[in-house]
Image (cartoon, rainbow, N blue to C red):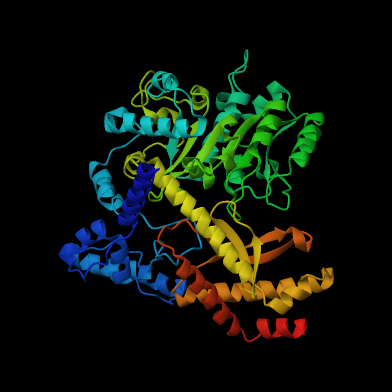
Length: 543
């Protein structure tokens, strides 16, 4: 027990050093690079100001369409960027920036990024990446093992096989989802007899050959908008992404999913894929993946899990059971640039079957030759940077126990914030956190009492005004610059499924403290009082 505690304490101390950096002194231009590499948070604190400039004002700094005829000194141009770009940028690493899925980066990321950029490897081809190719394949194997937990022999056989791939790196969850559904479409409508497959003959001929009336994708009404992009690109059509209603916990209703599958089957409409969501963008909830896997198997369709947000939870032994059933998925999307704390542009899709990617394999004479280990033969994107190096480094430097500590603390921080909201008379918790994401709104106690009477007409009027007040507070808080929460509009079951405007917060930043969360609520209370219209009208209605 003592040894375990010592390891945990050491891990906690290491994480504190990684994310918490002493503020740097004012830097001369000659030290800018060193300052940014060693102390990004300090650099941003020194150079970003709380600006109230509107986007249209900032656009005036970047309105000249002419390429300069005279070169500039690097030092002069860097000062220009500091004044015009850095000073007006969003401080996403700030511990009070809790509105979106971005966070502070570990301090080692910047010097490693410089190494990655300097090497300038192109992962499309072994000839332009060499050592980076097996490194990326290993990272894909590590993430595959995280999801599917196969034995070592499996990875010895398939990790570096030229004819197989355990997944694909890409720029983010959107391209990962497109890739997963691309594989699903090509496997479903593969070559058969004289038919040479959808990739060669197109969707119209494929549908005619197989005799399907139509193809659809099923996902909950909390599904990410990238799925409609995918269906558009793949020729399936945005309207054929069918949203299945969710329950009061924002999880897909499996009874309604089965009913829809049966209805479509009777109409000779083939379900291409059922998509489970592991960490919805708006509320952070996880679908019942194990039940969805059974339904997908029953109706013989591809089961994809969009775990762009919640997939990193698998690194926590404590919370891994929340994603029970993900190991039955045919494919899984995970964004490393979310809860794995690497920079933007590090998404990946993992395939359970290493042979799946053969459905999208492509070659060219001058590049991606048959039999080669070129990664580009199984990816939508061609030229790509070596982002896998940053994931590889993070997995080694932070390690699984370190990630578990970060994930556990984030979820527990969200639970604390939910308690704080519930204990405050003038706030209403809308969705409880399952991961580290939740929604709430400012609602005076007297208004909450009135809402509890369940008068539909009165509630509609109250929710309309509360929505306007929420929007007012959120905009004012963003303009003030000290903190940031986002907002969204979601259906709330206790109000008969009415859509209401709410605050949305993401608590993944390890630098965010309980004191900061308390301050954010206090600030929102003060901002509510600045409303000259909405709050007085609400209080009058509640009298």
